[in-house]
Length: 424
Image 1 (cartoon, one colour):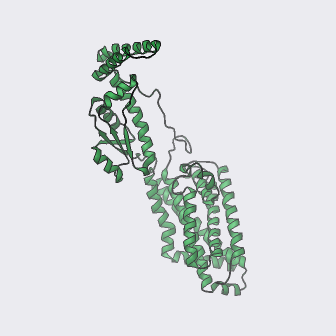
Image 2: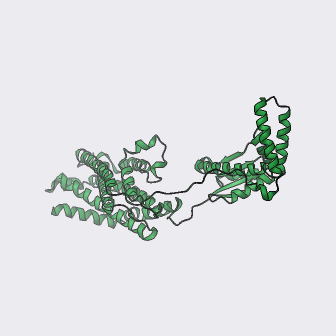
Image 3: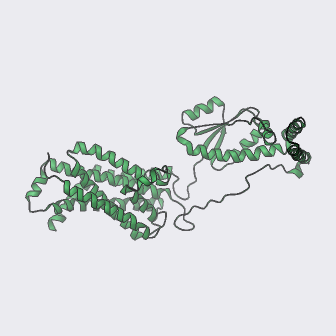
């Protein structure tokens, strides 16, 4: 064991003596984690950003002006007027994700469409294809605001009176079924009487969505809000730990290329001691990376371990061991450092992407979500999320730990089996 620990200490000294390795492994995940956390909403006290929406009002009626006023009061969007060419160019160049075009005659046509069959006014929604989520959100808000504004205009004001009168006249010569015609005429006459009431009596509020929604984000416990920094720091730590695993594998290939492994083998040291010491030092470095990253996140962004501390440590330790075995696997199957580096980086980036480190895995397409469960890093990400902002108990860490340890075992066995002492 003396030789084993001497080799471990040697690896640690080499790691901390390499400024690039320290920066990439410690500072990079902190900086990038801070950036992604800020982009995806920041801490629980940060005000959510608004979606910029350009409104092209070609009608310029009382209805569209009132609709614009309602959109400006919406919490989730930042509405601004624009000309058609200006709005189209802004969306095309990515300066605004969504633009809405209200056509000429929209106010009267929409009011008429409430009571009379025929063509309906068409609203054009221009959107950036990379912002489909924002586009869907704006469509939902727009539907509710249009329903309330148009119905208000139909039941009050000159537009509503004129529309109801036109509808009654068109029904006189209609071939509609007598019973249906009589019922519709009764409805329109009631609306006509309602429009004749003084404004103070009628109110003229218009139709509104007949329910209210209450947001209740479910996290660790009542009163604890989702902290986006928790996920972003976990994701970036996992990404750069896997990059550290690449460095472990490439370092072993370089040692083999220089003939050092052949010299080690000449010493009275077994393959288990030599490869085990390398795995142990990489595991310790991984634990240091996670400790430093989450300590910084706790101090700077109030990221807390809301769940089981023991479960969090277990997930971190299991993933660190898996990362070390991943590095050994790279060394075992790689022929040269140059050839192995490109393939390892590609495999690592795919693993990081599918793990949910960049964006939460529940945002993936439905067909992709079962596939990602075959990626060990996905379990590490889920385990860290569960122990931090989700506030789960230690039982939720058991499966991620088992999967990560299984991955470490498979990688390690293949690495020992395939490892070559001398360069080809």
